[in-house]
Image 1 (cartoon, rainbow, N blue to C red):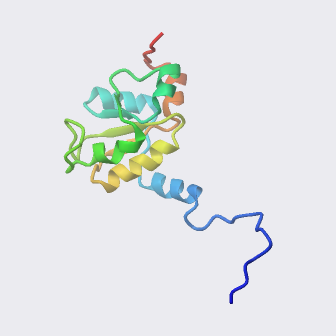
Image 2: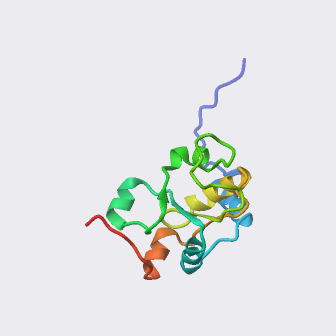
Image 3: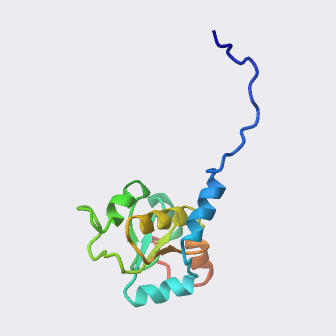
Length: 141
């Protein structure tokens, strides 16, 4: 009979696939862009996709012309071969993913590349960097 441990382990060691490792691996696949570069890509026909929760967008504002896609359905909307993909999406179209500060968007952009979007990336610093750069923001106020 196997004994059941009676002592609780107080620290959990992150394995090789802890979040910092995943973030680093994701970012290694990306050519992350600045707010100004994201705006230039948008003007050239690239897509900016905001994955922030609606509550954040309502409080902080939105990037004009950005598409909003809830994170829970993002992969279905970004699969260029899928039936639920965004209109106008194709493997070579630049796609810039945006979250609050540029962490979740890095993970999402790496997934987009895995799905076949060769020019997927994310906005370094996220929406807050865009706003701090003084670039256009729309609000519901």
